[in-house]
Length: 206
Image (tube, rainbow, N blue to C red):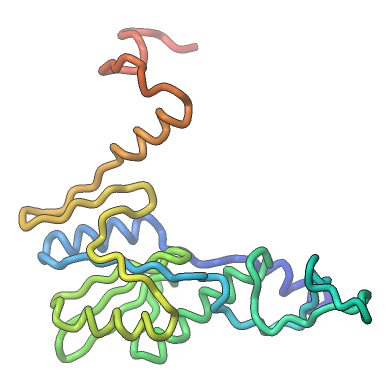
């Protein structure tokens, strides 16, 4: 099989498993760590393209003297099948060179141990969850990530994958109230009457 075909079919993008996310949140709740969130701006424009790839001249940017020529891409573009993998590799390589280690349990989980403690980063496409046993150096880490990838600091973790996160000294609560309200709005059921159970009691299903 040609190499180009093999690369074309490798369109995976490692993302954090929900189980790992919940484990880290539980750990943070037990240890009293704070959870922070960052968002990568234009995430799909940070990946490097290792394959030789071409595209037709887009409308509005056609060279009138050479209309049949094509562009050779140097960077990934949104819509390419290789883009999510390239983006994940780009951020992952930077974290590894910065002293982080990839977890064997999940390739989107990065851990760094220092003399000051431990730092944990979870990556889900363009969202990052950061936690550590001390907030002293979290802001230095955020500053470095902003400079490298133009990330947006969203502060403490409040909303992730349709889950609302409430942090307090007493613990961490995970809610999906807003997600349920959004679904009711989507299907025009915001005015429906609530009921404690979805079906009549003692109904036999066949």
